[in-house]
Image (cartoon, rainbow, N blue to C red):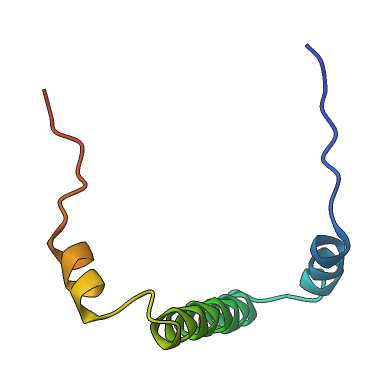
Length: 74
């Protein structure tokens, strides 16, 4: 079996070094929450930018909410 090597980018390496200081599950949950908040805000900023450019609006949001994307069971 051939082994593969994963190459981490500088940000991934920085996060791995920082995560070595996490000692409790509570700390882990705090970090997870902070990362979720960060990415939630990034998505919000991106959506606001699309709206400002006129590329997204209430109609598109409503259409997405009405879509059924489940895979049908056979």
